Image 1 (cartoon, rainbow, N blue to C red):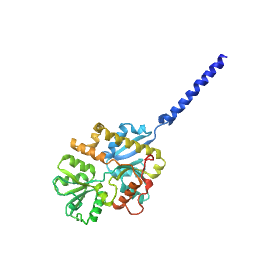
Image 2: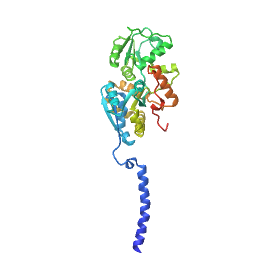
Image 3: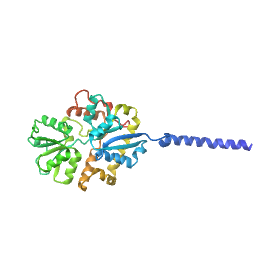
Length: 331
């Protein structure tokens, strides 16, 4: 009789305990997935702007909180980063929209996860009379990234629409952003078309201003001015077999960006990566980075991106199809 009562007691206790353990296992990702977290490896520039938010993801543990482990491979130049992702040495890298379009045209498809909507800026001396596209006619212009730079191509397209002829052969100087900054300071050019973070460094030093932003020109073509022209890219075949991993990564970088926007003190740790020469430069880099935060993609914004590809020289052949632009399933 005593044995029967004891067995009945154990059965009553074990049932709710088993149900509780089952419920706990199903609501705890760490326990539900018994084993090491999947890794996602990215190749980025050592002092590039993407490294800022990826470092934040790692430092705040946003990768592991979203069920994966981020591995960052810092490289010295863009060529090395693109070679790493093209060769399969890493899972992904940062690239601009035109690079992805050109690879697609050559039969190499990449999934595009938006990173930044900063296209670039036209920077002039503080006392310059250049304020718009028409004012650049007959001026000496420095162009970062070469003749195929998307900002320069877009600027020429807008100028043509307005009947403005930009820089003859002896009026355009191509070069690296640091060299063009120096050329502007020495008076060797009247304006430079450059990347936003190099513009921010000039403005933070004082004596220089933005005449206009490349994103402002998009409105001339009735396009959304806040289009993500830089993104994290992953080979399509790899992305197709790692859909959850890509979604977790996208969620973690969104959380990192939100944290950086809401907590200015979190930028203190990033100072060495930002290499700001003064508090004013640091503030300019901070403001520019957050201003480039991309909004969620919609059908309309994807269509605008496809139009932008055509405007900036990537329109030969079929434009990047909509399914290669990452969209959060919840958006």
